[in-house]
Image (spheres, each protein chain N blue to C red):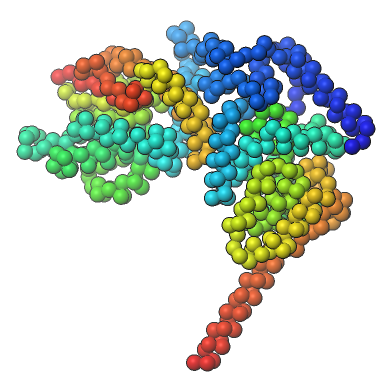
Length: 291
Length: 316
């Protein structure tokens, strides 16, 4: 019945003999179930949604996550509700067209704090991807376990692709060095939209309208153009087998993928904060000396 | 794209299409799928079932596990409980609770009654205090009774914490008239026999592992002549309204739970547990079996049967 997202061994044979409800395999335009009789799940945690529910989830999660971007679960739900039927399949097909992508789909590796061994990553040389990732996790104070499981994507393989995208988001952060607060996230989402085409990433860029003026200026001048330029021309991030790249040199990986490193956002912000403080002190001093 | 890669993609698509043809059932229209669902309706628990399992929504689980799973649900929803109630019932739950309390008319008017101590009210599964505060308000304001006291008992400490927090907004927070106690309704050891004038349980009994044990405990702690009152979700009478109501329950409520509280599963459990609760007549019979006398037909439907108030009186 419900399987986990791990690759099943003989799915073809079992589906043919079981005759379980294939309502999900029919195109979404002719759903034949209501909320009272959902078909059996395609994988563990799967919830088949009706069209109305999907629309409701898309609008609701989109609106509420715009109002409160800290609700990561809503951003995830928004991604799942808007990725079907076309965008996530297109991403999966891009994986199928790449040899590494095909290997990832066959092996279906999952990134969790147990599968990664973070203390070991911290011990790697400081120029490696693994070290950069562990250092980024420590700097931002996050853990790889906070990713919600995919529930609303009907095709099992596409659900895995979405889960993989979600789990690799942190690696993208580490590779480009963008921090977790709103400004950094918006820039990274713009990059991911140019790279993957998932609607949620594109919509997340609208969060840029909630940025402060200086942040918006930086996004418009520096990070936005960087994101679009690099996202479009570089290779698919979804096809990177991160588990195998942990000991690669970061610059070498960036060069291989075709990504430029953007200016360090935390440094820029710190410099600006200090400049503002110095200006304020100078002004106070000038005022005090006049009196 | 490269030739071998595109061939691979094409071959994969053909295999998938073949699988679909092989495993495809005959086309099911919407009405046929409804019929299929009715055949697959979960069968009610029969006496031949293993005695140690019970239902948790539509799931069947071991009896010992139900308490902790319900506990997990309510710990998870405690902080957004009131907001969620408003969203799910479109605010109507306030009307239900107001009617419930007004109808019971707690408190003894000192001008007309002889008792000087007021009523001793026990509110079970009353965690966040909705009913308790209304009772105290009604007794004090309408019946001018400054002595009626309410004990709020709940098995879940998180819900009790929410209740204590909300009590701070009322004048009863630090008075002897309001008490919060962590207790299991099936085993109220800290409440002596025949000590309670009014036993209320609102939207709680649905979650108990053994409803009959809770009703028997209610019988024990109530004074002769005391009233057992239960406000709970029930079966809707009108079948058209029921169809709409069920679709709202199973479609919108888990979605609202996901959006507002970030917890779809708890609200899925909630609507499934409503579905599993016995009907008005069945529950009235359970109350009678415990020894209560039941007034009139035994229950009052609210909003077409979405909720119902069941009452019983302990014989003198």
